[in-house]
Image (cartoon, rainbow, N blue to C red; front, side, top):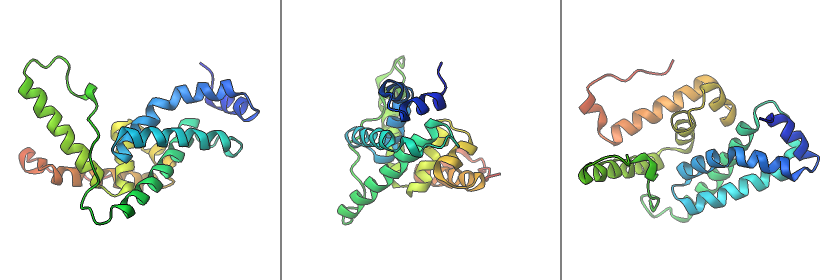
Length: 196
């Protein structure tokens, strides 16, 4: 498999095929992140298109200090933050953002035999998406990158332009807020472990 840096260097010299291979490599991850950040597929697809358009036009600024994936994710996060900020200012009189995003069908077990169980899982996912959308952007971003995308804290910190300690704190705080919002703390009874 070709190295990201080599592909990025080729792309910066005008090799559109090299850039297309990078897009293929990071398209799904970028889309998942944008859906989590913006709450619906239409806005997320627009954000992904804008992200890769910006990446193509700014290839000369990719210094290779991080992976191409980290760099393009940081572009996507900045763009999603701008879109979310603009949307919130337009909807400032509305208590919550619209949640027309249908939860990822793969998250609901295809093998679950009982329809009531599937309905319960879909409801939990809708509640989780709604609670996630209410988190401040920095917490939602950190939690999405760490928990949903599975990035290490070091990469979360690089992507967000913060320290590893701050990234850990953001994820911890996001989990605490989601636990309270979804009423999971009382049922589990286990004390939550703080950030390290």
